[in-house]
Image (tube, rainbow, N blue to C red):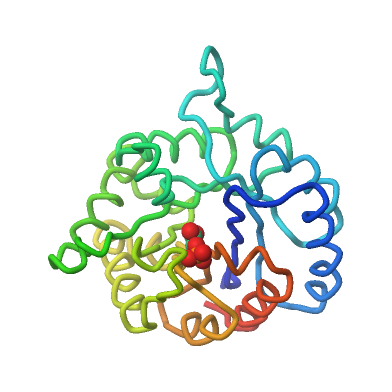
Amino acid sequence: MANKLVIGNWKMNGSRQSNTEFLSKFLAPLDQLENVDVAVCPPAIYLEQLAGLVVQSPIHLGAQNLSESEQGAFTGEISGSMLRDFGCHYVLVGHSERRSLNGETNALVAAKFKAALNAGLTPVLCVGETLDQRHDGETLNVVNDQLQAVLDAVGVQELGKGVIAYEPVWAIGTGETATPQQAQEVHQHIRRYIAEISPEVARTTRILYGGSVKGDNAAELFSQPDIDGGLVGGASLDAHSFLSICRAGQSRQL
Ligand code: PGA
């Protein structure tokens, strides 16, 4: 079965110099790890630099966003085929920062998921509730709606070509991680929700946890039966921290 998958989301951080420094510390130790899949999502402008630096390494590249359109008069946008052109394998869709700061709706996120698949990318669909929604007992309903929008747009088989990342908004960048039990509960729910339509897709789809994953909590999170890896923000900016998270993901096969 598939390896755990650990994806670093660098958000709007980095420079040509710091990217080079990161990889000079990260690549050799990464080579010692087995049975873990690793990707980094730098700001799009650094994809070409990173593509050159990670060549011959097992790291996959991802982007943080894409346009729902293929080409044309969309100033400032980047299409899925352009990302492919620069060696991208993954692309995040529906990250909570884009949902809240850029007004991305479930429908737009679903359109981006579809555009990613059309371009030959593996979309990483981010879902998750805010603190208010959790307090109101709405967590599972929010996640259902976010999943259902993509299911409506592409169907279950296509959903299964992507990766899902459960990221409770209240745990992102706050240092407050969901407990392994809280995360497992939602992951299990997501898998069951998909299983109602296709048990096979539910079994094979990787569901990552994101939200203050660190070197010291990754192993316990990754040991939960429905957690297939992590989407890591802050801790992916430091080679040492990111390596310790990747290490926690190795040798634990699905
Ligand atoms: P964090 O971010 O690890 O800094 O909480 C996770 C994310 O936004 O994907």
